[in-house]
Image 1 (spheres, rainbow, N blue to C red):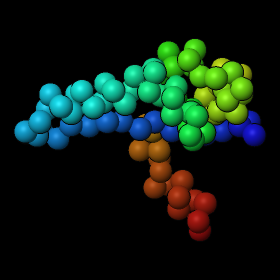
Image 2 (image 1 turned 90 degrees about the vertical axis):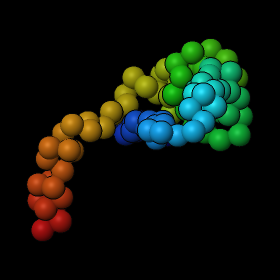
Image 3 (image 1 turned 45 degrees about the vertical axis):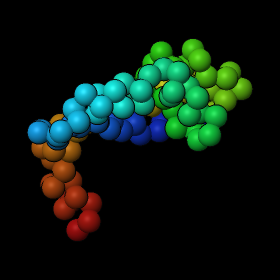
Length: 96
């Protein structure tokens, strides 16, 4: 199911000048924690981004996640630098 899946990378950002910076850091730490990301797999098949979470995922569920160790061996990582540099050219080439 996950053969040659394309992995993307997302990020958390904190807007400059936000009045609740400390709370924002706490939220990000909570959401990125291994325990929370492992628990999330019980409800949705998003693979945890935190590698430490994999050890806490139910083995019966882990097999079906895109970030399971066996599934990651053949994953394709999207190259943001490539698309930033060449994306316009590639879109023109393949939509002409």
